Figure 1 (cartoon, rainbow, N blue to C red):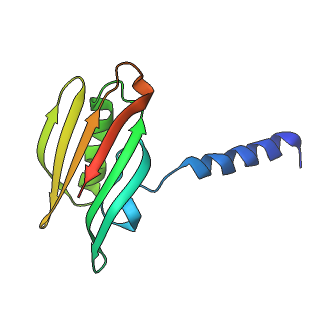
Figure 2: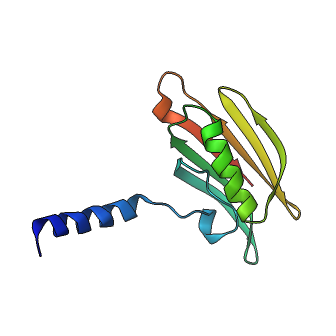
Length: 123
């Protein structure tokens, strides 16, 4: 095996380790697009359905719309509807509903260090 092929395989394996699942805890609740999940707590299930959770995220947020649009697309693809959307230059709040469940997604930019923007999901 050539050195180039071996290097490519190692790079592909390492890239796979950085990826996170699209949903929280194998549920129908999507992660925030483009941000890294840093902490997950308060998981509650009713049978197979996730009914409670708090997820915290970090990552680069230069413009909240760059995160809002793909996150909305993820939720819609998993059967959620958007109940409320508020977006400004520095923050965003999205509320999704599915049946009797509600998921609130909050985003905040960090102008001093854009790579340290924050996000959260409360279910």
